[in-house]
Image (cartoon, rainbow, N blue to C red; front, side, top):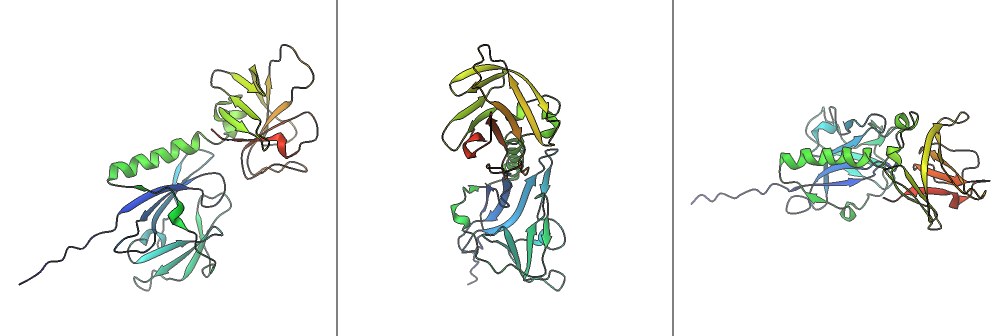
Length: 259
């Protein structure tokens, strides 16, 4: 008697994770651990450009476009990858990749990193059941990232929409910017006046507000784009931040988006 054995294909899942640490979550697709694979097996990675909001596929080209059941891409703790497997002479193997400076492409190394693999099981994986879910995930990536990063092209035109939300400092103080033009600062609310580009440092934008009873204690506010180090910067310049100070900035003078 002929017995037909059904081959179970691995379940595809997806997660959002900032793989290169630049403040932008990548959209990662993978095969879920099960009968076929013991660990999460990355099959595709997408990111988004902070400049124009364009969704970019990182796993593209001759090698990375072949990821799947026979070619594998392992992600390491130090933001690098190892590409391995064998599907023929043109595929290569045992090579490494790393993010380029702007995080919009993967660059091939001469060899893999040899460092310790990252634990992908701690990521918030969701099942992907259809092409429709795939499409909506990419759209969600675009919406999520574009709404959480300061946009230089908008700020330089006086538009503070990309800064709307709640920002918190290391000592728990908050600054809230609302879409209807209000600034909530240290328990008080002020109408927002305008946003203007700094004439001294590119990448810094001043936010002025109307203080009807000035006391001299209300701080000057500046939007500082991530990647920009300013003087003896006490803040985390890997993130967008608001600088609120009337004097020499300290660590608690910097506010980071929490919502």
